[in-house]
Length: 193
Length: 281
Image (cartoon, rainbow over all chains, first blue to last red; front, top):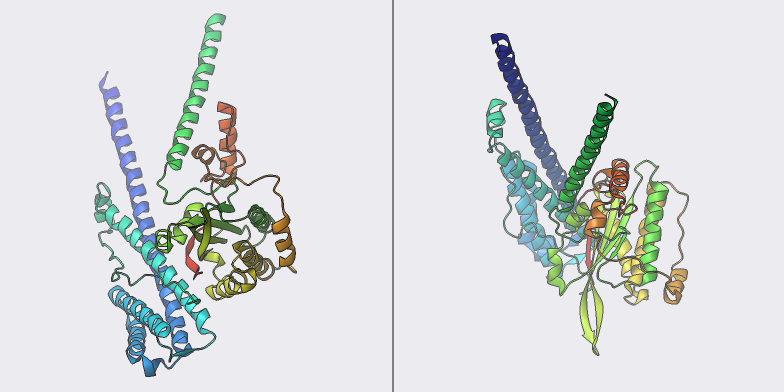
């Protein structure tokens, strides 16, 4: 093998190596972008579901006659949760407001079921259906969001993606959407009791 | 020289045949690996729309549900937001607490119901009870899950009203066959008329009730979960109708048979987000 051939072979190997590195960088970067976008999409879904529930829960309170009189603490908890939701402007505050609303709503259901002095309007049953469904949808949205966060957080810590992550500025990890145990359980409606 | 050319031609043909076999085997392996994905729930049946795993429904109900569900998909597949799929599943559980181990959203997503998330999944839970040495099945809970894009049309309020007026209609004296079919007809009426703009959708529960108790089945729907082999050789598996069909034809040509040529291994790729209703007996 003469010198020219040797140079060609070495050049070819270097070129191939650079092509592989280039493709790997492009694929790695695109993958991180996809994972990041997925989290944004899932977060938006959680926000949509929270807004829907927030809009409905006021109607539920209006449909329950005598709540302030017989279950002031529940009424105040719902009011506080709604205020917390309106004031939330960070993920932590939104999670806190979500947990407060979920807990207050569960208390409301228990109070209405156990207290014969509380009257409910005819639209109450439909509203409870809506809220229960939204709790279910919220639970799914939170789970989807947390799975996306897990995929992303794990991805940027694994080799070799950890290199691309620091290279392309994807070092930030996302917070999980944490709720207290049982706070996201979906109440099942049983009107036959 | 001619002999050499002939020999090289034979070798080329052999080599290309080997390549085809090799590619075919790789494709098969890929599909088998897809088929081996972890599953939390049984696969749906070969008829997709009707999955009476609790064996709690009468054959006439099963076939009626299948007929209506197939018609819904066929009648709407070319329309805007079309290709809606309605799927029914029943499960037998030991007691009510076991229902918590079923997640209707996960099941919906595993079966991928509906084109562009336009689907409805109705799940009925039953528990066994014994009376005079005979085991009966008692209805426990109704759950309905709707696809993301179906949410505006089948809201929880609408579904709750339909469930109360049809499924839990006291006139049916707890007969789930009547309740289920009435509920499906009501859902179909909304989909056909309100969503797809059909002039009307008519049904007669009195006729259904009469036929239900007089029908003598001449055949029975397969109500076992789709077998592994039917699943992996289905043209609909993951690849969608077009590519899946080509793949199945390829398998047919290469290995002499596509076992599940006409079996739908998944729905139309739909997903859902937890909206729907829960109703206990």
